[in-house]
Length: 331
Image (cartoon, rainbow, N blue to C red):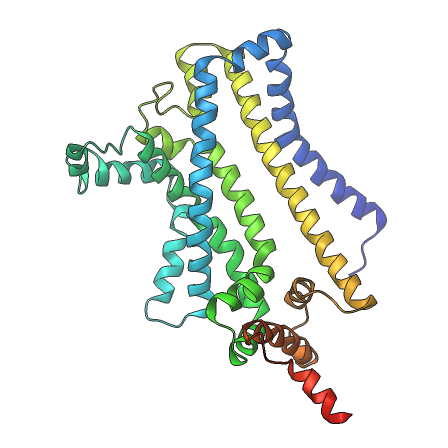
């Protein structure tokens, strides 16, 4: 369908205005109000002991939650994309459960399980406090961020197929070599996006966290809870704006770092492809290139290159490469 330039530019303008009103204006207003009393006052608001401890606690939660979500998210995605087992549809629904359930409901469920008198509440008698302590914050954040990595990686696994993995396994690569050399490079973009979404949600989570937190500064008060506490309890609007700006700044820094890592990885792939065109590629470059190769009959030779490289690394040092012996026979 042919669209006139006027219609095309009009639709783009409407989309930009929509994003401007919903995103740019609110964020800009908070940023402006944060510095309304000067940068010195802003600095004092974000360097109070409560603000520093809230920032440290939020970052610590991210440091714990992201690796756990990466490991279990990739395993879940592999099970859903590669596995055949009874109850697979149920697992698909369970993974999406945090998207459908309110974070407040998730917090109530955690209290029911780990709170006093709950199913696992007996751990408090052992000196391990979950609800209204740091472990409860981690569990609540894990619950709400669980689907991101799995849902970003699973479609990538389905798209790349299993041809390269099967070829490498047939020629002697073990499961770890197949995953590290073939699967992981192929899913790295989906994994990167999953990590970015996990970090953003972990930093900004409020509903589930407020249910399992005592909101005590220095103990279980995250940045989001600090913003709410300053605004509703202390009636310190400008202090709340400053804390919100700090939270946005941390999120932006994380997003920029992830973008730089992604750009650097793409540059390495491009360099590896260029090296392959100019001359013999290094083993790592070969693997980088093959993970992005087409998955049709034309890529069979590429699969052999990857798997022969893995097989060659597994061969004894005293044995000669197979292609060298073939050349000697030809001579």
